[in-house]
Image (tube, rainbow, N blue to C red; front, side, top):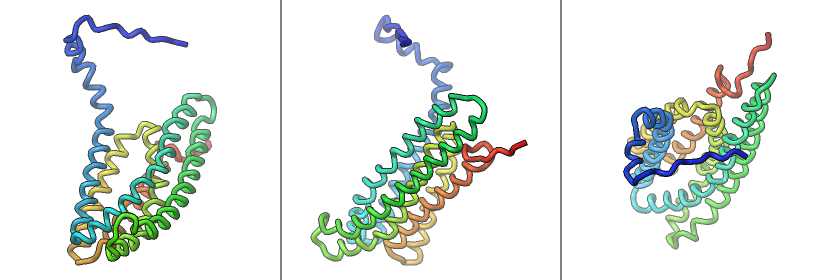
Length: 239
């Protein structure tokens, strides 16, 4: 085992001197895509709340119920991302002949599990969205509208299985900056789609359809990027 001895600070103000630009700027540059990614996610959640409130109090209540069912279920897909972050770098670190093909095979296996988990989570989400709203409210109309969001909620959860797998593969292969740039698409698409739904005087159901299609399209975009040159799923040409 290797132990790293950390020197004690000689006085409480020494850490100020350790915050030198030469130390901090590379760290900030490395963390910037992750911070931007998290900022975009929080911003997107704010627009999701706006989407729910645009159709009146009853629809907002239905939106919050469906969202309360949907939100915990997406956590079921998070272990796929964590697995990719752990397994892919370890596989690449082994090196040797054919390392790209080994990593590629591992990535394919991760995405296969992600697709299966997404399918199972989506089906579970459909059942829960149909039967749990009455636990959250005694208002029959609100419960009925919330249950009516089961289909887009299911499609969203299915797409998120691939989404989380793709996200893990992108981060595991050092492509956080590109992933953050691609994530901007979600915000643009969702805001534009939601505004169109409102302009056309459609319903909360249609806004949730925009929500689900955003997840599906982003999963498709990142899947394509992973298969382009430089991506972990790119098939190298044999000479």
